[in-house]
Length: 237
Image 1 (cartoon, one colour):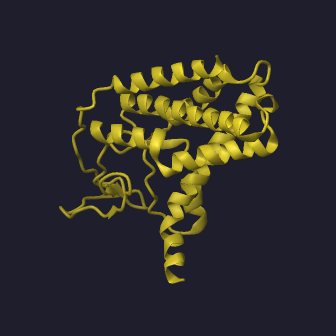
Image 2 (cartoon, rainbow, N blue to C red; image 1 turned 120 degrees about the horizontal axis):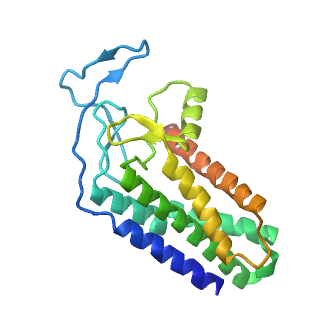
């Protein structure tokens, strides 16, 4: 019964995302970037520097020349992140394995049946989170991709990666609170309570799950931020 409830909520969230028009394509634009002294300078008609994006077309690295997601790209990114990317599968399996080792929740037992329940729980939880976030971001026209910083130095870049959980870009390339990410994480955790064993979770457990989710997201953002350096290290070997 609990898993039927989970599937019902997942289908509802997915349907809401699909209700957003897929052919709505925001217009491109270019914006002047502020220098470190706070003054602004034009691009001089030059093509803005771009970075490689493995899931979509190349993404501008700075606010200058920032291009918001099109409706088609939002669909592609949502389906990939929620259901079939290696990252989504890996994080679900990793979280399920952690629950299996801790026997959490104990009502689901051990063995393949227990692991299967925990894997289904985590997969549904992440899919619901992605659905809530995709819907909110599409309505508000907020960015859901991780845009690497142009900062130098380890700690400034580390701080930027962690802050990406809480700050994103609007359709005009301005920094804005990442309300869709935070709301999706909280909403997914409370939704997951519907299919947990009876009496297993309390509000404190749910909020602890929110913290774990944000921590996991920060870890992935740090990996994305420093991925070029990590790749260069492995290429030298």
